[in-house]
Image 1 (cartoon, protein in one colour):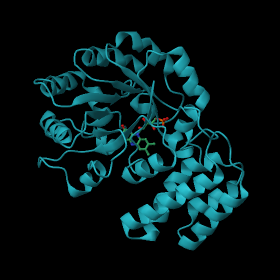
Image 2 (tube, protein in one colour; image 1 turned 180 degrees about the vertical axis):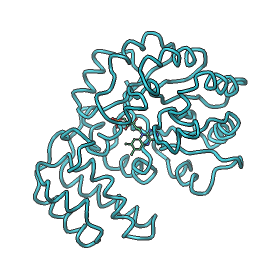
Image 3 (cartoon, helix red, strand yellow; image 1 turned 90 degrees about the vertical axis):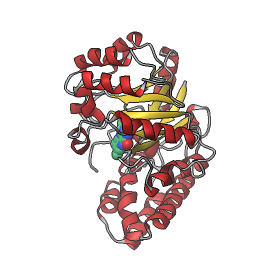
Image 4 (tube, protein in one colour; image 1 turned 45 degrees about the horizontal axis):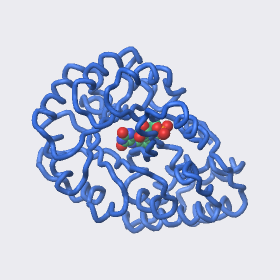
Length: 323
Ligand SMILES: Cc1cc2nc3c(=O)[nH]c(=O)nc-3n(C[C@H](O)[C@H](O)[C@H](O)COP(=O)(O)O)c2cc1C
């Protein structure tokens, strides 16, 4: 079963991906955070920083597109094929109002007929690249998934990765694993499961109980415990030194990319929201860390965390709880 690293806007882009591959590895496939094709049939310079084959060399990467217009999806998919990618992923899961309000991401799931028309146009002629889809189970209720299955089943989708929640769950509450499992036999294409996997034992359990699955996708836990993939393949858990070196490398790369250390501190805090779960205790330190805007305070707090707090072997879970 493939282990894949989820697309996460502002977290798992090119900087994280390269450093993750260098420090920890174990990922069979990295997905880029979503890229939105524009009217102009060419990726922007900024988008190319994420997509350029040179930047992604050595990793198995699947670019993800956000689109509801088949023409835009098609030019972008063909361009990705020219860049050397063998698969492109369509985002049908993003729950953000700014995206769904335009009928994109999870917003597309409210209109199965329009989705069918989109796929009819996309698959009207043979494509030089495989098209996979990342979806949720529906907008409001999981019962909506039956209609969506009927659409998906009619097209040569190379893999359907299912984040087992509906839009109105956003990222909270337990994944709707039973609904996912009920749907599984009805889906003719390879299927991947996504939602709240954060322990190596959960990966083993899925591999044992559902070997028919093509992949397991891991998102937030890969930020909390970047060694989870390596461990799942029998490798060592992350050491404190390794996590500290990984953090410092990310910070240096972001500082170079942003050209400003101030912006970098703000950005690094997004990682700490998940990474703090790998440390024992330290509530007060993390509260200070997530509050500070001062670079030297930030650096000394990171130093204190790295040198005084014991590392857990597995992350404490409950990402949505504030410190
Ligand atoms: C900050 C953040 C950004 C995300 N960005 C994307 C994205 O660009 N594309 C996408 O398909 N899913 C995105 N997701 C959803 C994740 O890929 C994944 O489906 C979700 O986090 C559930 O998996 P997990 O429990 O393993 O984290 C994002 C999630 C988070 C928390």
